Length: 136
Length: 487
Image (cartoon, rainbow over all chains, first blue to last red):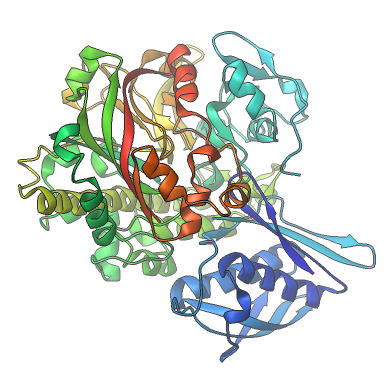
């Protein structure tokens, strides 16, 4: 489950999931929903593999979202589906998407940056909760 | 969490200044000073921006106080509308969060010799032409494209680089903060990724709160200074608000990642990871400073190219050259930047790193960094408001040197979150509402207009009243918008 929440000048991403792999997928989907008005319009046409190293869970989440955002910044890539395996030393992921096409996709927000402000991953009952503020 | 009110102490210490004592939180090295009147204070207390002012007071080497302007609102880590000066001789830090993602986001103001009557029947045509010519909106690229080598040269030289290629005149530089070139910029310290992001974006507005506005002077408050600035009633002007685009963002991002281990390495603690910093005099600090200065020069260059395109559009629409239309730049000033400046601290002159995050330099008459043309009156200060009400030209004053490291406010300050403003705009035609008020607005996204609607901001007149009363700068002229283009 994921949702966007309000922040005075910016926007927050929040997700809950039973495990960390699912949490990272939810947060990625949440980021896409902040960027594209109807995420269902994005097709999983091109597949990319992403590997990131890092032992701090929160920094790893930050780096994960930043990686997805930077692929939009440089190649205009937006994503529709994610498979993620989080380990003690980092993550590996397979993501599928396509280049942003203004004929078929509508911008929701220009997410300019992922921030470290109040970045958190915490235990939530039996599962996990994550929050990230993005700069728009 | 965003709506939780601040319940900590705020002591009124005279002349629109409220103090958060160091006893509020363990770790505060200096008090917090918030400049506001009772009306604005009520709005400021509604969220945790004052708590962020207190957090900034914990930064190593901070001098005098963690200062906030009347337009403060909650940001990430640092509040927006904050000023923090650090002394490198006392282990003072440089903080990318204290500058902001959009390094050298700032404002440029251009005069014309046109009056309201000359333009009022051409506004729709003018705004349309500006909208079609000046690239705006998320991720947009422009007609000026530079390869990596030239992008780096542009960062070293600032607007001089494009002026040498016919996109402006040398006198534009005289009327730009730091003459458009912050010394000791070292573009080799800017990552390839940042350069790539900046290569095709110079001369584009971007999205969010950035804009290009055609305005008319509707009140003059200080006739002598207005005369020195060349401003008079009913005169038409252009205001440009933009920054260093994706390049500046990437420089900030790169530095935040590089600073992750600095607290442990240099032995300090931070209450929020977004306050990441490094001693100004450390390898990490020096690298960021060299890159930040390069991005700042890119920002000046971006506004130079935006101005050039606006001049071309005016020339086309009115059938006269921009020189004939008197389109001279009054000034260009940064409001997201850190500068190494000399200030008097407790009676002693010292050089400090002044971080201005959503705050504007406001040097008084006689200061050597004020251009010759204005040395007798003070530095022009440009304060954009919202697109329905007003914007201001102020002049720097001595009070700012005495109290706020030569700094004043930067705008109206948000009153509503973007999400709340969007919800508020559902089912409304903001462009029609603005038209009804006499403002022609065009934006590349409908959301852009809703997020930036006048109601989303505090009244800039209230903010200006405080900085005037507190002598952080003085009122010169007020402008109202006639036409605006946005991302």
